[in-house]
Image 1 (cartoon, rainbow, N blue to C red):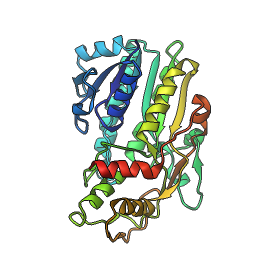
Image 2 (image 1 turned 135 degrees about the horizontal axis):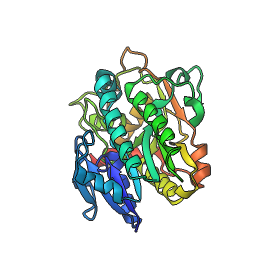
Image 3 (image 1 turned 45 degrees about the vertical axis):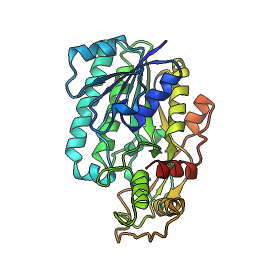
Length: 318
């Protein structure tokens, strides 16, 4: 039974992944500070340790040493507004967390490491409705991300690449997660993710209103958490085929406007809800769609979940 250490393993993606891999007979240990996660979401046979990775104690270091694979998901995350309003804290904290984990990867000479990066590493000038560019993994060569969150992720990717040259037979992977959504995702109206926030507004309408922060014309793609877990599991099964360091987009190739998502959720609610739009045209990025061709080729599998089905699950569970 392979031992896998998952940082941030009680969060939205982390809890789903921890439970998924447990069902695949991996021995899972989770580290989380519970800032956004909740250990109640984890299966009972998962080992859990509450820890702040900005300062890792010796007793936690041993867990890194004993693990066969380390999956690093821990990160300060939130809505676009949250990233803009807390730019320094986001960059500073995530940089410290990532550097501390990499220090232990190097210290204990760990060969198998999977890092949760983000689509926010891509440059803003390539993410416009005028270009309509499908972003490939190589499109960060001249990147300067618009958000400090994305910059911290890109810097960490570079550090992982550098370290992969120092560790013999390294199997390091960065996963650029794109629009991951599903059950138990944060629906906090101030810093939650778009889809669960809109579902919450519709579920309790008219209590919170039903207004977008922009005109809703931004184009996005979304990948369901079940498909995300399946992709990561299949990557783990083929990790020996990695040569030092690889980057994969984890995403769907579906494209949809934010306002269309809002309308779909109204339909799911079966309520008479009036969608209100902001006078602000778009957020900082109006077209974010990434290519999943590389990951599909590597694992020989494609995401399956229908978007509308995923919306219904979230709405009905609230």
